[in-house]
Length: 350
Image (cartoon, rainbow, N blue to C red; front, top):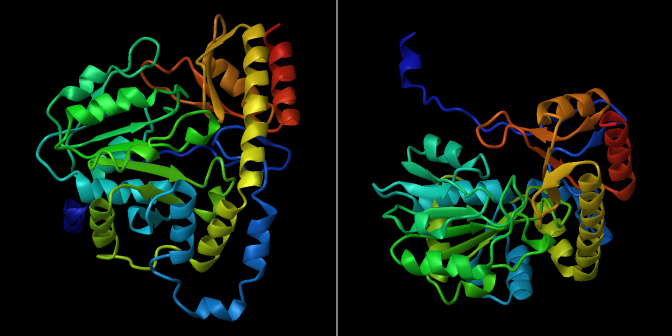
């Protein structure tokens, strides 16, 4: 049919499976195993149903102000969107419009090449070294922009801020985006550096450490000019992306810092316990500073373990991709869930 000639065809992002059956231990999508702060529920309950007839605040001022106060920046330096995927996609549209390819690691969040493809942005993937670490010199090439996750996904490897400073300094004419979806689980954020480098943008999410994947809240922090440019693009096609419940719930989550830190502490403690148990069972793994582990077994193929776990209602993530096709990504669940995982693996690998 002639109309098919005008379709934009892309290879879409493939998310982790969302099993619907009961009794599943779901360790494949990096969701938080604990509920959000009780303050979130209280905030949503205060919303009057009649309020939903009105448009939400297009600037999400309550949420933006709360984030600005928490991260010690101006409100004009904060941009919020429908999950960090929304924020990142808008950032690709806004900042990556040159003729030079944008740069990102070859093993990384698999949405980056999808966005580059759908927005017709040239890109180059910079290979990580044999330990899944960034080779900063690869990012000193001529480019149209840079995006790097820290800690990396799916490896969980954390890089230090000094490495990113070197990359930013070497690229004064490029926007450098640091995607910090997992930074709260053990890393140092680049947010304090946004006033020092006018080409730096930091993106974070409420989906992991703040236990609110279902609310779809993400944000960016950068200099005021970059945020204005990002808003211009957003408001060019949809002014009201953040809904009322998300604005209220997100604000409440930011204000309850004690619960936030308590939740992070529990995940980190379980992560470190699980690392030791998997090592005991013959797994090699990166020193993950995220809410997941990236593991490979010394004698049993990752795909076989993945399928065996799935048959027993334990879901983890597997990719049949170069360099990582013998690795599994395992989300950190509750202590009880991780004990079930370890017990199964102990029997399976015996």
